[in-house]
Length: 430
Image (cartoon, rainbow, N blue to C red; front, top):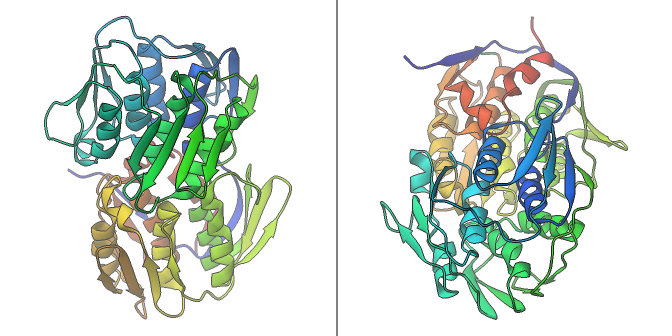
């Protein structure tokens, strides 16, 4: 029996939400704190499945930390360099790409290790070949345990690197993030050259900015080449406050734009280091009324118009735009989003299937989606494909004149366990 959550039709959106910490920042900060010299206090850590997978892995790898304040504060004693587990391990990382890819690189730095990285069934369909090939070229001993080019993988250590590294850029920015994090720890300077166009560039910006906070500088030559000095140490900043998750903000901002009232989101501002903060200006371009404060962003309803945009840099919130487009005048076109296909599910196929249930006319290609909204959005039962973002963005259908049912709503635990509770707080019904 499938678990289904039915959201009634919403008459008005109004209220204030304190955003949970950014997932992208949380997992990077945990990893850098573990590698650093000194103790780091991370404030506003996201409390979700993906973060739990990182914490569980770090604990098994011998990193000492304490959690407090409902797991939102984490104090970590840094390892002052490479993490060297003392025994054979199998690390289960669920479907967390921000865990498996950096750990693949980091653990390959060991002279000798005996570690298996594995996850849930969808993780075994998410590519890791390009990262593995690059690490192998630098001496890493890595084996595929089931399907070639995909997890689970066996790590035997051995990566010493080369002065010139190439990495594929068109599949996932997490491959490059993983290399950037480990290169300061090897003996020599490293030049990383990107093959093909680098996707999701703002996530690389997050990585580089966080590395700088921990004392490491990276030279970025127009996202085509990166220079990293070797023999460096990560140094704890002492305390670091993790800003609110800009991807999570997108659902509440769109809700206000569609059917506000006014929504105020606390713990984020226009100076966010997250690329998904661009969502605010896109929504503004569509017609939403936006106001920025010192530590908040607010949004008010207005007539929305469709957009035609390349969203390669912000694929996660592009999903929210796809659903928001059902409430806009005109045809919404989202381009250059092939990376949707290698996420938690094949999001291009999933989006097409579920948007059609609303009565929308949907056309998809290899890397684009075109959405013509229906005159009246139909009542729908939405399949989430165990993808947290499918569940959250399709909650916006409750802003039509029909209820919406979400299958497997608990999949939001991956990044935002309290999402539906928070969404209900801002909903007013007839």
